[in-house]
Structures are given as structure tokens and as C-alpha cells.
Length: 269
Image (cartoon, rainbow, N blue to C red):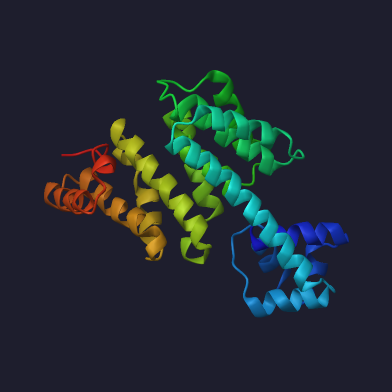
């Protein structure tokens, strides 16, 4: 759970509007973006909001920590079971997750499990139709493009045709037009979506669709979290412009850095 999600949960529990919760410490518009994960909030402003609304620090951060641990533990367990190709462990995890209270978080865990069991683990040639339907429903149901919907979309872009993808990419970039103002986790997720889209555009020889995602990738500030994404943006730009020298150099750097299994799936001139 992010700080924004914890603030939203706490605000709703108190029956406050976003304007009331912001308490004049930050603007209602800024506060709304914090709840949605578009903006980070400084420690001073966060503590001032908690004080203004008589929210106990210990309870707030305890709630935040416990939810973060739950999210991390389940996703980590799913990943570990996948790494060990342990289908029985995944089935056991599914039983645990099904016992959780209904929530979007629970739905997210179940989708991750289904992806692992039915697609990644068995390396199926095609994603089952009912899973495709569930994936699309998850993305469109809330129509908010929050971090979880973006993560699901990033991992399942192949279930959409190119026209659907182009519409959805434009929708995402339209909602988050200024990557330099986003939290780093959103920069990383949206950046990965753009890279995946470029790969699909190359596969279908659709160079005319690449300008907006490429420009977006260039606007993402450089940081260690998005280093690979920035490198891949340069790689695909070289591929589309038929710059074989640059593409070979980047390919060699990634391969020599230990990414041999990854780069073998990249297009080459």
C-alpha cells in the first residue's frame, strides 16, 4: 500500500472530503494526485495533514507497514514459486488468497496467480479466453489507470490487438503527460509499457506509431530505477532508424552485463 492509498483509506474512514483532508496544507488538487499516486508528498506536509485531522502517527504508519508487508509477502511468494516451477505451492497460495476479504488487492493477487499458473509457468502458446476477459475487465473496470491496472496491462499487452493497444497507450500517456512529475514507480511502469509497445510496433512494422511513446521515454528523468528502460528507449530508436552501429553497441553492453537471456529476444538489424 502506498502513502496515497493509506491517506485515502484513512480519509474515507473519517468521512472527510479530499478538501477537508488536505486541511489547507496542500491544495485539494495536489492532495487528490497524492491519493492517486501521481505526486509524492513531503514528510512535513504529510505529518501536518495527520496532525490537522487528529490522526495517530503510530496507527497510520502501522497500518501502512502491515499492508505493505502483506502485499510484498504474497507477491514475493508467487514469484518464488514461479522461479522454482512449484505449481503445488501456487495452488496453496491461491487458497490463502481466496480466503482474504474481497478487495481490488485480492483481485490483483488472483490475476497474478492465474498468469503464473496458466501462462508463465506452463509457457502456453495462447492465453485462455476467460483469462483474457478477466484481464481486460480488470484494466477497464475502474478506468483510473492506477499503478495496479498499469502493472497488469504491462504484463499482458499481448492480449490486445494493435488498434486496442494504440488507443490504450494514448489514454495512459494522456492521463500522465508529464513523466518528470510522477513517482518513480509510475515512471518505471509506464516506461516499460512504452518499451513493450515499441517492440510490438516493430513486430508489425508500424513505425508511424512510435513518436509519442519515444518522446515520452526521453522525458523520463534518468535514475537507477529506470536505467534499463532509458537504455532500451535508445535501442529501439536505433532499430527504427536503422542505426546498426548504435543498436549493436547497446546490445553488446547489455549482453556483457549478464542480460544474455534478455537480449536474445530483442529485435536486431
